[in-house]
Amino acid sequence: MEKTYLFCVFLSMLLTLVWACEQGTPDVEVAEESRDVLADEKDRPAITFARALAGAMQRSEALRAFLKEEALLMFDNDYDILYHAIKGEQLSDGNTPASLLMEECGAYSQELPALWDRVPGLTIFVPSLSSIIFSAESWDTSVQVPMVAVLLHCGDKVYYVDGKGEENVVEAQMVPAFPVVVIKENERVVTGDDIYAVTDRAKGKTAMRGGVNYRFLDEVFDGSRDRQGSIIAARQETEPDRKLEEAYEIYENTNGWHRDYIYYGITPDITEGEFSYDYQEHITSFAMKGGDAAVSRISDQDGDPGLRIKLRLSERSWMDGFFEFKVRVLLNAKNGIGAEYVTYFSAMPDDLFRMSYKHRCGSGAVLRLFYCPTLEEILEYRVELPLFQWDLNQYASAIKIEIEEVDLAVTTTITDTRTVKFANNFDIQGDVLKKVGLKFGAKLETTESQSIKKSFTQENDDLGGVIINFADNVLLGKDGENWKTREYETGWFKIGVAPRKVQ
Image (cartoon, rainbow, N blue to C red; front, side, top):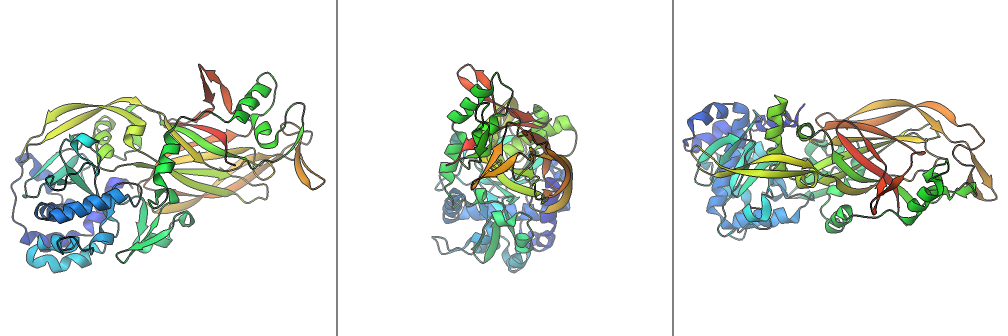
């Protein structure tokens, strides 16, 4: 199921709201060409919520200031505000967000709380449209009253409404050049009945606010952690550890394995070594592949691919904030128990794609300025994401890494069966377990067929997987002054993988 359609499930859960609340909302003239688009009843509840929020922000500077403050907290490491967690908070003017929104629906406001409680992941997102146009950091709440946007069920149109009730529908490919906030469903936390149903739930902690329990999909989305330090570490260019360079130099003209030296200190002259916990495998870089099609792949849009590319470049660049990528490492263990290691990393669209923007005007009931984006270049993103320590006495000589772009948090478990090789050249010498001999040594490796249970999310965009061998060279030499790390790729992405010193 595509993300767009799941979002529409959330819309339909509020359908009753329309028939009650809209009777208290005056009719608004919209452009003639927009009326057919707005006729889809799946969109009507979200439109009603957008109208209420826009009106409330128009009337209350206190609400605008509060929303800015909440967005800057980045509780999930994005500029998201979980509505149900903050709806009862008291504002500086004595109101609450919920009371202000309910006032916008007049006599039918008493029905709103029960309806909204069916959508625990309802989120108000403050996009970054550059510091010049609008962002959470630059929002001047004393004068700037944002419009409210909703991506419509059709997928190629966005609905806008301002605090005066003026509304319009424009093509999703158009990036707004004016202040706007977005209504969406949160991708980084699970709430309600699903909070204990996440397969990798142990990785994300549970939190509560405003009587709402939620769980982060992974600790990397927990905004209470040292976010700034991790971002800086991920983005800075890093030279490989000297031991990786030594491994390249030792085996440059000799048949052998770089990781033998990195993890065990084994060289052609020193053929025995104890495993070192000083190093850990990392994804060192990530880049999409496939040009425009790559953007389309991680942006979940049905319809004509050519149209899809243009639409989702802009929509995902501003309506959804960071991309979230789920990384699954499938490890076959010598004890016969397969393991799935799951972690995540985030990237802003600007980290992955260099865009150019063509300025144009909007049309219809609301005359606004928009930008049309064009993909200029796919960028390599520095990740430095820790994975596992590769001890050949525990794990197979080849592992599989799979990557998904995360949309929603409903997971399914399946079995992955592969034929793998295990090294047997380990001996206990005194009190120390040592790897004896280069590569697989004098003892032949063991070949087994093993299965691993792995989880995946049906709504996510599966980008495929790559096989990493212990025997693969880590460094491939120098490109000018810079070392080149071994990269692995599918039709949709490429990653660099290398050991990094961790202690």
